[in-house]
Image (cartoon, rainbow, N blue to C red; front, side, top):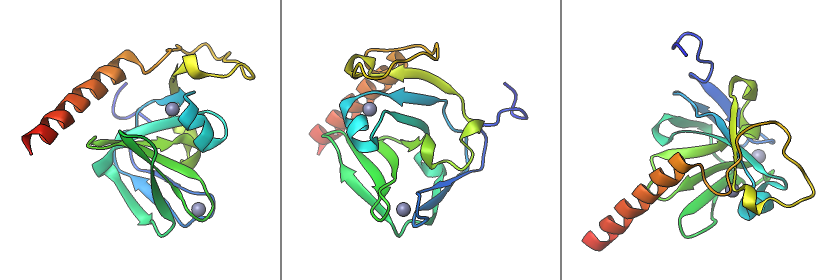
Length: 159
Ligand SMILES: [Zn+2]
Ligand SMILES: [Zn+2]
């Protein structure tokens, strides 16, 4: 894909339902992943569809509604404290941030790539779009996460 036709390129705009969180992303976005893990299902009401970006590419036009919730030992989730829209997921120490597809103003510029944590998916809905399905993380993502965890553990033991 050339730079000219890559519609994932910047800028992307997005925000929450009520408008108290508005952001722009000046950089490429990842293809979207559908996550079926229990945390994403609780947080979103269905499964989570999210793209991702470099954290440094994300700037807020307004973040007066933004709240963060530590959702596990390794990550936190950003949402609007007024209207409740789920917006972000980020692993502590990671340079990347996941952005919910629902938050984007023009989500059709992003393509979906795969389903992850399909082993946790309940049976009441089916996956029929033909995208690859992984029981857990995508292998490449899992490798990057393990690398990050190693680095974090090292940094912690250096202190
Ligand atoms: Zn809101
Ligand atoms: Zn998930």
